[in-house]
Image (cartoon, rainbow, N blue to C red; front, side, top):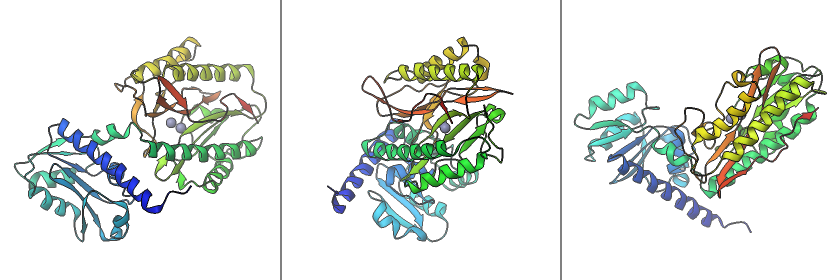
Length: 370
Ligand code: ZN
Ligand code: ZN
């Protein structure tokens, strides 16, 4: 049964109220009495706002949302739980006016996002208020997904997988990488994507040795490996997955590299569990690739969180201090890149859950020869 529109609105309100409550808790935990958000994804997360320009200020005395007149109508339905202000001139001046009237002593700001000029302006204008960088406060909350987010991520994955089915139909000898990428992107848009999650990577033959080799005018040749890394965005949420194909039959060496990556990925997936350090998951993949003799060719982390951003917390790499928790959605994507030969990467999205993980991407991970 289709939920009643009014009911959906109530559910949305509950979600943002809950997130706002968690944000207020995070603020207290850091000894702050105000938190100024300038990162638009973080603002979307706590308020529901889907536009591209706004500020949010969360304090013990209430939460405030400021945007410009382009969004006057949109925020009526999207933003709840905030005192809303439409700013007609400079948003930062309006924020400063708000802050100075709120008796804030320690104000958190997003150091990784607020421009130096804006920071300086705030600092000069509000003497007596201590400015504290609170980068990562909302990102930490975003790392574990709620049920509503999981539904959107699952949809973004289904759309990406429809795109992969399309690319499998068109990859072949003589096909131009860029044409394959375009077909894939069309298929994702037809399947409901609001956009691609990032620039589609189609890297064939020697170009596959570049982990982020975006599609070019190169034609795919027989016997080459083809790395395809792509994702879709649906209602703001992203998917991210990679498959490596072979055009025709793979020779022994390429098959050996592929098998090393596939079993490294499997080992890492088996490690994923709530309470496990992200670096342990990375180590499982890295150790396997090293033992297979390809250690120096695995040049990136094993994975990352995915949600409103394609790359977000947690980080699954050798230097990560993140610890996995139920509800986190992460990629597991080891790879081997050998100059002159090409590359193999296999990337799936998994959700940490119930003493292990659920693999959300469904397409086969075995080598497909096209
Ligand atoms: Zn990817
Ligand atoms: Zn990725």
